[in-house]
Length: 198
Ligand SMILES: C[S@@+](CC[C@H](N)C(=O)[O-])C[C@H]1O[C@@H](n2cnc3c(N)ncnc32)[C@H](O)[C@@H]1O
Image 1 (cartoon, rainbow, N blue to C red):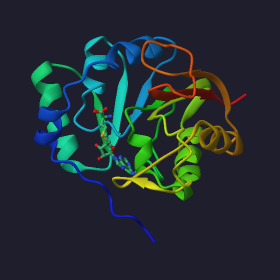
Image 2 (cartoon, rainbow, N blue to C red; image 1 turned 180 degrees about the vertical axis):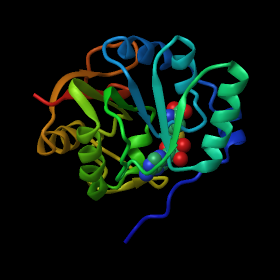
Image 3 (tube, rainbow, N blue to C red; image 1 turned 90 degrees about the horizontal axis):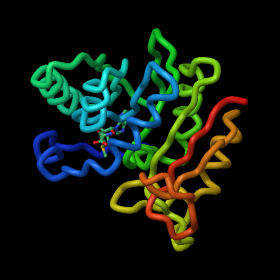
Image 4 (cartoon, rainbow, N blue to C red; image 1 turned 120 degrees about the horizontal axis):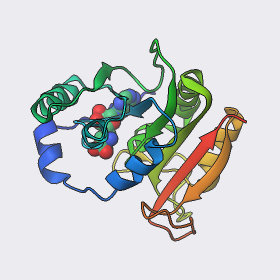
């Protein structure tokens, strides 16, 4: 059975989520390969700073209210972003990307059985030599069954994600444990995997 989508009020989201911890991380990752596609871009918290630095970036989100606010903020900042309303579980854009990224737990919106659909889309939209970067909270506590929810979000362990990526044809190249690019450990705060098609 389909789980109902978790929806956000864009203004409440922006007023509560003021973290900038991850922006530098994405700025540096984005340098390696362009253009960029952000899956689940929300109100553009990450998309807009990257566009301000001159990156060619597309932000995809399923929520029109989140995108409406993103467009308004981008206009206010005087930056150009290509915004797309689509579903990361089956998107079809007329373009390929050097880096596709799914930051800040957006991946946790996917049920385990939906992951393969999302990764097929990522694979389809990657340029040769491009890569996918996935950032999620680290659910390595072992107390949760594979498909258990945390407040409606799916949890993923490192091995879950490695398995999903592997069966979709990706090879994992790097795993970070936080935005400071520290090496992943079982007790790391984040689980950030970088993968490409070998
Ligand atoms: C936690 S917010 C993250 C927003 C932004 N990346 C950030 O870091 O501020 C998750 C976003 O994913 C979007 N989302 C959830 N499920 C989605 C889906 N199936 N396809 C596309 N976007 C989705 C939500 O609408 C929401 O804007």
